[in-house]
Length: 131
Image 1 (cartoon, rainbow, N blue to C red):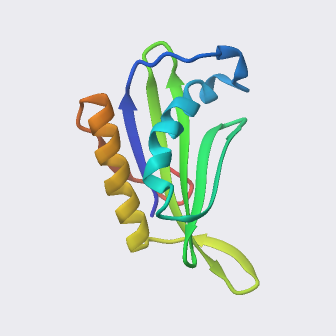
Image 2: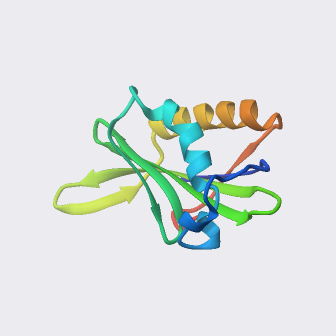
Image 3: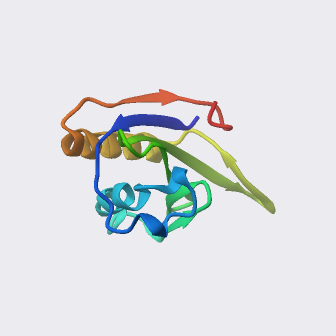
């Protein structure tokens, strides 16, 4: 099942007018910090803003992985990250599954965030609806 990682890191943004919604605020800074974890290790990397936040989507073999970033409080720099892995089913859309690739991603994201924030972060298991 997916993971949710919550952390706080006060950040500065270059242009606050680029964000679609408040939940997108600063997500570009967070994803830029996490992109080196993905680049060179995964395929089909996509990185963009949506109306719900920022994402990095990528693949490792048959497994599709996602890092989805949401801002809960721009003033405090409170963020949540959802990590998800999916496997495509024949002729059907992908389904959320636990994979070794998800555990590897979680460990790498936690290491990077803890190094960046200077604080311990925890990952909480959530269901496929991120609850």
